[in-house]
Image (cartoon, rainbow, N blue to C red):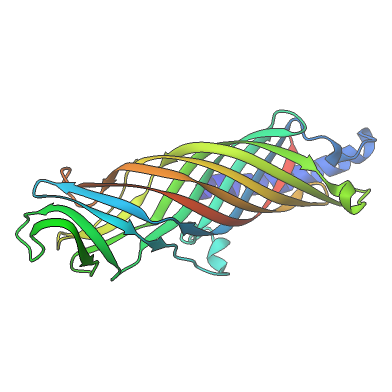
Length: 281
């Protein structure tokens, strides 16, 4: 992913300088007047919120569900890691590459690197059975349990990776602000829908078992977004988005045993700020 981003950025900068000079001579229209045939790429960061979810754990010696479990994200804040090629996948980030099939609509592929961290020591209801030779063995029927570290730690922190395709619309609303030279500054509104798969790296310790932390295709996601795009000097932009959706993960790895799995579903909301460029090949 780092190589793709760096290659795209270098290509973008070179194309922008060449195209800008050519457009001035050959095209009397504003470069920003038409989008058909343009590519774009952006990179940015996000904050996330998650709905509560029921998490079902199943293995050879246990089968139980924790109800209404709450979780949060793991923000990095304003940090140079977003720009450091060796560390840019550590924060919560978004990478997207897209192509305009006409002046208003584009298709894209993207990688939403979110982080999901179960809130430790919360009190939740538990249903099911545990017979794993621990102090937690027993039959539970809407009982309350404290999610201590010796019982469960559970997070998708490297991360809750949503690999998705989006179909989006873009409309120039510069005229609302009486902006005439959109080649210097252009304001667009964008909306889109997306779908993809979840490829989390789940960090979990369950019932005193050895810590597990590995990548796994765990399920699918659906999403929708709305955003504002601020384009400067034809080729460079800042894009802000509100993006919400639904995640269904029915195959989460929790230990090194193939018999131990978890499942959950929940809603998410991302707040995204990204920087990028748009150019025509």
